[in-house]
Length: 327
Length: 263
Image (tube, rainbow over all chains, first blue to last red):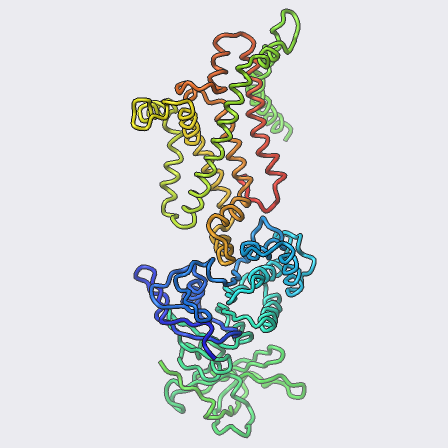
């Protein structure tokens, strides 16, 4: 299958400061892609270059085979959702959703039908006449999503759309966004600094670090086979293993260590429990292995009580689960 | 507590008296045209004067043109400076303050030198040209008020993100300013418009020196020739000016809650 969204050697400098340093990626139609990284890594700048709000210093952006690198934002036929909702405060919800359709010259009756369809899709039927200030943040952001997808854009761009919402709505809305995206099959680029958010809804993740693309792959690949030290530490929890017994730059995920032997385990370590954190479904133990702190995640169980602080325990792990961290 | 309230009220009454007594005295005097009794004869005389109606109508029309030209100049200028050239803002602030610093007399002499009938661009050579010049002069005079009103209005909305949201939806610059920015700062624009109107209605210097039949020169002419009518006219123009100011508040209250305000 040919690439639907293609970014080639994309570079962006502001004066002497290069914030995107030659990024390449290509994605297929219908994929949900996350650009993940800490603030200042260049992920938002890439999104803004795809949208047309920033001009690339060099490189090319293609959507569905069309080169859009130098088109104005209003010529690109894209939809975008902003962190701060950015609904037009003078327009009703219905007029906000219909804005792009009206600009495109769609007749009034078709517009009304499309607005109704969109409101049903986002679970806010009958909200046409409301004004944005009469709605909660989560509702406003859903309207912003409806406004972005109403004109059937080629690409949906999401610029940290969940950051301004509180935790519970953040989780429910991200599931809703993913469901709508899969329903419509719309290619989506999602910018976030939250690795859990990225892993839970993406088909593929692009991990950015200081202007470079560090790794690109499915959430499963990114988590289990991180290609750089940065990706390994930024995505998920990680234990650095004692150099004396494993050699330098060896690490392992906390859920891959257990207190009892498993069929695949072939390595043991002995240590003292220094802290027990009961998180509900997961019990997080901190074990001191001759000076190296190691975190272990075990599932809570009815039958057994968690070990106590000061207990001496044997840790079991499999050598194949040990990650070697590169530069 | 009691005495504090007393002093507060005393100061309030003194302050109010300072403003109200001259106004009340003017009003009282304007009613005394007929010997021995109060009457509205002076007002009847003012309204019967064809020059009152024609000069007032002239000033209203010039005022409306001034407002339209002012909005067309100021709104896009403030919008682009805020959006793309924020480093220009101190310069804008300075330029828009100049009309308050430079006397109208200096401005109009400059105009006459530059655009006089013997110059390369003889605006004052024709009636229409002079009217255009007068309107331009008023736009300049009203600039400090219009600029501040519009600038305050735009400060209360996130014009950057709203512009991007409209752009990605396919809108061009004109559609963005007309359909998104203008409606959201309408109340701010209206307050600037009414201030402009109040300035234009009473302006004397420029209209007089350009020899245009505006309301300001008419007021002054009456004031030097008649006894009771000037008092009546003072009351009338006071009502017009305060009416304009009052409209700012009234419209501000009626406007949707979403619209940006200057207060």
